[in-house]
Length: 164
Length: 116
Image 1 (cartoon, each protein chain N blue to C red):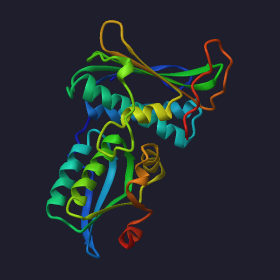
Image 2 (cartoon, chains in turn yellow, cyan; image 1 turned 180 degrees about the vertical axis):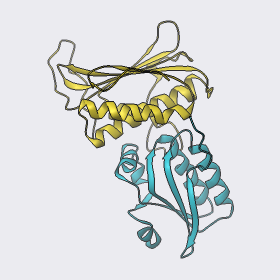
Image 3 (cartoon, helix red, strand yellow; image 1 turned 45 degrees about the horizontal axis):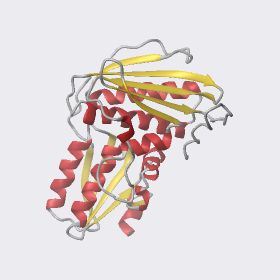
């Protein structure tokens, strides 16, 4: 794994890791630190960390079919725009491409193991966009705002804040 | 990264005819397969009541929850009972997001789980 200095809190960091579950605790630790620097409270920090963990688990399980030696890049970047301060997380892999429209949460009333990751991500994060990455693989961009403000930007209202 | 081969189960004891499974650490994609195997083996002995003590679990992801759902099904298949105890707020938040707090029997402590 490699990265940049996070001590200023205003800088992005980029983690280059392999698709091994053993890397997940390190990403969680970096995410927690970054989220707290941005201004999230402990509860929000926990939920953001969980969302990123779930996204990475999906890459490992589905994008790479469980192979543990494939590349994943995680970028954590503070954001401060018209919706306020927050954290942008971008996860890029080089695995199997799927139709972003088919990445959906499942019915929670059907209690069974598995398939909860997308629901968690979409519940916690304010913006979630899956896309095909240039050069192959998938890119997932997620944004979470500390205290999301509504805007009147053309093209419609922003996504509602996640239920906390 | 250093290997941790101990798995998430720290202790197993019998109290008041219940089997109490004490878990610890972080139950994620790395640890869940070990927990799933352990709960599967435990269910083979058909204990009438299993209490999963989560008091020392610092973190859990959806693979951990899926493992507990799988354990519930195995234990429920012979009409046994599974009760979760002692989860911290962070773990509880995961159960709330997935609405599985309405599915499992959850108690604040092992002592209260024994009464459940």
